[in-house]
Length: 231
Image 1 (tube, rainbow, N blue to C red):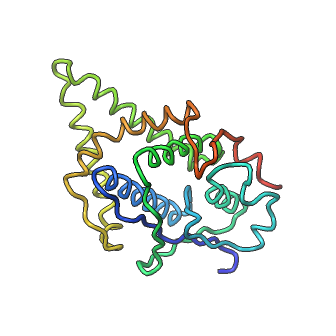
Image 2: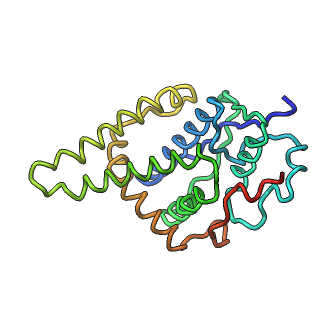
Image 3: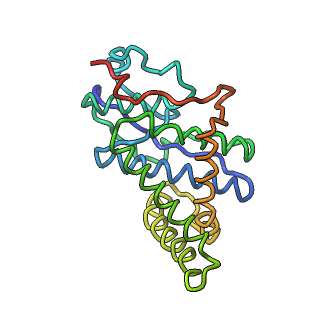
């Protein structure tokens, strides 16, 4: 309606090689999670590549596009809408998919993901913070399981966690992949699952160290969302 924000589906160009496939699958996972959360009236993420919103909302904010940050203005705008009671709806139609460019190389991919490491601290929304904490704890548990592989009797912990994560992701993503006519999850995803906690550790380290840029701009921490919402 005229008073709703609308999120459309977003995809990424097919990647090349192992890391290209990893990046493409991660985009699918992120957008599936964002769509599911919004469908449950608890939106946490959106992409400005496919987003429509009321002009009245845009005009009600003193700095709607957050000109002082390098990235994240789309989700910040959506969270402002959510906090103001503006419904956030999801378009479910393969014809509505917007395709974005794939990362040029591994460094570009890691830099783009490292900037996400800053974002939970930018948001005061528990619907964002709790899943971010859950991902961090899950990755920490997998890293601990990886570290104790040489310990007698504990070598099974890491492969067991990888298989459990694979099963959960397959259960969650399969309907989305089928509906949008994407290739089904393959055994290559087992390798993705195994490397995921290391990937989280590397990108989190880059975020903490501030070693990331986005579109040529340095990315820095900002204050929580609550301080930026016009009352």
